[in-house]
Image 1 (tube, rainbow, N blue to C red):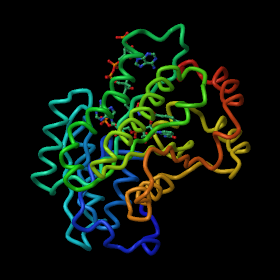
Image 2 (cartoon, protein in one colour; image 1 turned 90 degrees about the horizontal axis):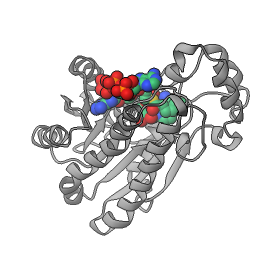
Image 3 (cartoon, rainbow, N blue to C red; image 1 turned 30 degrees about the vertical axis):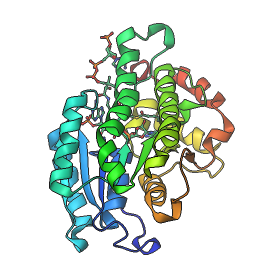
Image 4 (tube, protein in one colour; image 1 turned 30 degrees about the horizontal axis):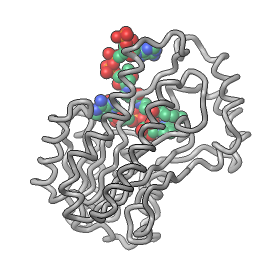
Length: 279
Ligand code: HXC
Ligand code: NAP
C-alpha cells in the first residue's frame, strides 16, 4: 500500500494537508497512503467511522517519519453541511487544506430499464454533488494555499458501458465540473484535474462489477496486459499535486494501462453473463 518512496523526496508534502473523500478504502485509501508516505497530513472522510479509524492507523505509520497527522472524520458527501464541518475540522486539526481528492462514489450494475429514479439520483448525489460539495467547502482554504483538486473519475465518463448509465452520467458530470473549476479558479492559483483509473485490482468497484473469470478474459485485452494497483493511482495523484504538475490544470489523466483504447464491447458482452446478483 505504499509507492516506492525513493521516486519522490520523502518529505515532499511535509506541512501540507490532503483531504480525501472516500479515503477509508480502496483506491482513495491508496491515494491517501501515497501522500502520507511523502509526509502529508491526511484527513479522510467517509460514512463509516470504524472503517476510517482502521485506515487511519496505517496512514499514521506511513507519515510517522515527519510526525504527520491523520484525521478520520465521518461525513456523508451528500450532506453539504456535514462535509463543510468535516473540512473545517480538518483545517483546525491539520492545517489549511492544500489538496482535495474527491473520490467518494457509489456503484452497482443495473440495466437502464430497471434503474429507479432514486437509484439514478443516489449515484449522481454521491459522485457528482459530493464532488461539488467537497470543492465548494474547501474553496477558501485552497485559495489561501494555491492548492489543487483531484477528482477520481472513471472510464464510464466517456466510454458508454452497459448497466452503468448512472455512473457514466455522474462521472461525465464530474469531469465537466473539473473543467469549469479549472477555468474559474485558475485565477486564484487553484488547479483542478481528474484521474480516470482503469480496472484496479482488489477494489470494491471491481468486485461489484466483475468476477474472477471475467477479469481473466478482460486482462487479455488491456494493452498493458494487467489490471492496475491502487498505487498506480496514488502515484498519479502525487504527481498531479506536486510542483512537477504546476502548469497542469483542466486535464483528464487516464491511468488505465490503455484499457479505454479498446472500448467497452467485451464488457458489454460479459456483463450479460454475470450472475443475476451482480446486476
Ligand atoms: C438497482 C439499486 C441497487 C442495485 C441500490 N439501488 N443498489 N438499484 N440495483 N444493485 C437503488 C435502491 O433500490 C434505491 O432506490 C437507491 O438505489 C438507493 O439505495 P440505498 O441502498 O438506499 O442507498 P445508500 O444506502 O445511500 O447506498 C448507496 C449505494 C451503495 C451506492 C446504493 O451501494 C453504497 O453505499 N456504495 C458505496 C460503495 C461503492 O459503491 N463502492 C464502489 C465505488 S466503485 P429505490 O428506488 O429502491 O429507493 C465505482 C466503480 C467505477 O464507482 C468503475 C469500476 C471499474
Ligand atoms: P470503494 O473502496 O468502495 O471506495 C468508495 C469510498 O467512498 C468508500 O470508502 C466509501 O466509504 C465512500 N463513500 C461512498 N459513499 C459515500 C458518501 N455518500 N459519503 C462519503 N463517503 C462515501 O471503491 P473503489 O473501487 O476503491 O472506488 C474508489 C474511486 O475510484 C471511486 O470514485 C470510483 O468511482 C473510482 N474508480 C474505481 C475503479 C475500480 O476499478 N475500482 C475504476 C474506475 C474508477 P463508506 O461506504 O464507508 O462511506
